[in-house]
Image (tube, rainbow, N blue to C red):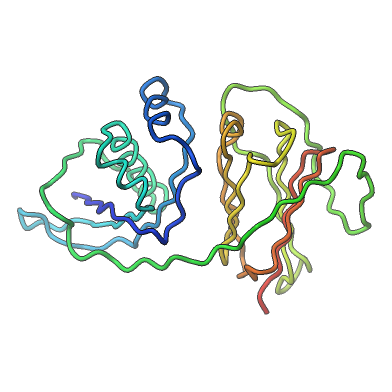
Length: 244
């Protein structure tokens, strides 16, 4: 069965981290292990028919207008966006797509779906000084953040707790070990959606970590998000209050 992916764009979708697109394209040509995040909004699959009259699947992948325009004029960045869309469809819908890709002369395959862009909370991450060793009685014990050295970016170890442990949660606590980071400033972006927390590395932090998405079992209040990075343990703690 054929699969069509319409790549569309909107200024309402968050842009990727501020980077020089030309530098990204050069890095892609020199290495296959480039860590660069472009936020995508993916539609649910739709059925249609190809020109032979056979049933096919159609997805709409929407990104910010800036990377869309870059892909139109930069061949290597276009290839990156095509690969990103294919991998996103595979990940979200547990499909395996052929990389035998063609580009039909169509403005779009079918009508473009309406995408709902959820409001993201403004998250301010504060840093706790190294000598701040006092912990409250309710502090959750986690594995120690042991520094490690590797040339490959990895998923940071993270844990999520809810309070109370049983029944409907009142708040969530997410703890992320980031032993390679001496500071959180200009290294991590934190986006909170109603039922998920998205942590993305920025700049030099991309050499050590890949982004993670933490699913939340209950919707949270986007206006009540707290985040602190402890310089002593190099652990990021995010507190999220559940909607009542």
